[in-house]
Image (cartoon, rainbow, N blue to C red):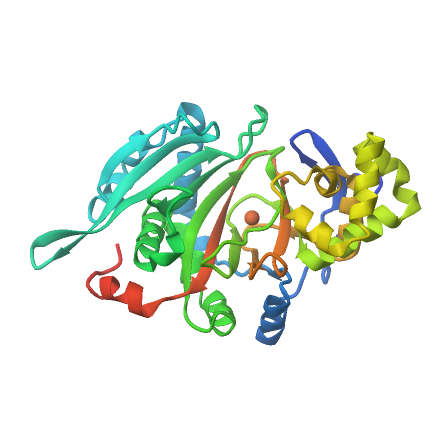
Length: 388
Ligand SMILES: [Fe+2]
C-alpha cells in the first residue's frame, strides 16, 4: 500500500523523521485504489479478535466542527507560547462551556514531572430542582510535552481523575464518564468519535455492549514528533480509537505476535548485519539480541520491560526495519477524517504502534480508550443530568 523509496524519487515522497532520526521515505498515495477500503463489520470483528490494527479511512465528518477545531488549534498555540493552560480555560469560549458543570477548582505545575506543563482540576456539578450538587471530584486535564527534545513541540491534553498512577480508574466508570464529559466541554469535536454511528455500531459487537470512551487524550503532534513503538494495554479498557482531526501522521501498527515475527525475520536476515551493527555497535548487545530472537517467550517478556533498548534500536531507529514493516502492509498514512482502531486485550494480544508527524505544523488527533459501557455503575448519575 505504501512504499519506502530511494531518496532520488522525491516528487511525492515524504521523509519519515522523528526526533532527529530519519526512518526512510514514504510515497504519498495519490492513485485510486491505493488507499485502504472501508472494512465491513465482519472484518473489523475478526481483526479486533485477532489483535490487529484496523483503519477506517475518511470516516469522520469534520465539516460541522471546523470552528471548534480552529479554536483547539489556538488553545494549543497559546499553551506552547505561555506554557500555561488554566488562564486560557477561564476565558471564552471555555468559561461558557465549562461554567455550568465544571467549576475550575485548582491547578498544579507538577514540579515533580518534567514533561508536565500544567494540570487543571475540576469538579463536576449538576443542578437538580434548583440545588447544585457535586457529582464527581478531582477530574483533571493535564497538558504535557511528549518528549524532552527541545526541537519537538508535540504536546497532549490528557483527561482523567484522582491520583495519577495510584487510582484504579477502571473501578470508577461514573467518574471516568465525567472526565470524558470534561473533554467534550474543552474539545467538543470529540463528538466526531463519541457520537459516530459507524464507530459505535462496529464496536458494540466486539465489546459486547455500548462503547464508553474513557481515558481520553487530545494530541498535537508537531514536526519531528510522534511516539515510539509501544502498546496501550491497561486494565479496564479493551482498545484505543484514534482519529486524525487535522494534519497527517504516519503509523506502524501491528499485533505483538506479528511484530515479534518481523523482528526475528529482520535480525535473522544476513543482509541486515551492517544495519544491526550500526544500531548496536556493542558486540555483547548484538549477541544478546540474537539470543533473544531464538527464545520467543524471552523476547515477549523483554519487550514488556520498561527498558527494551535492544529491540527499540531496531523498531524505532532503523529505516530498513521501517521499510520491511511497510512492505508487509503495516504502514498507515492517516489524514484528516481517518480512524485507526487498536485492540489492546492483553500483553500478548495487543497492537503495538509508533507514530511520526508528517506536516510542517502540529496537527490535532483524538485518542480515546474504549470499554463496554457499565450501565449499572455509570447510568445512575447520568440519568439525573443532561449532557453539558
Ligand atoms: Fe498509544
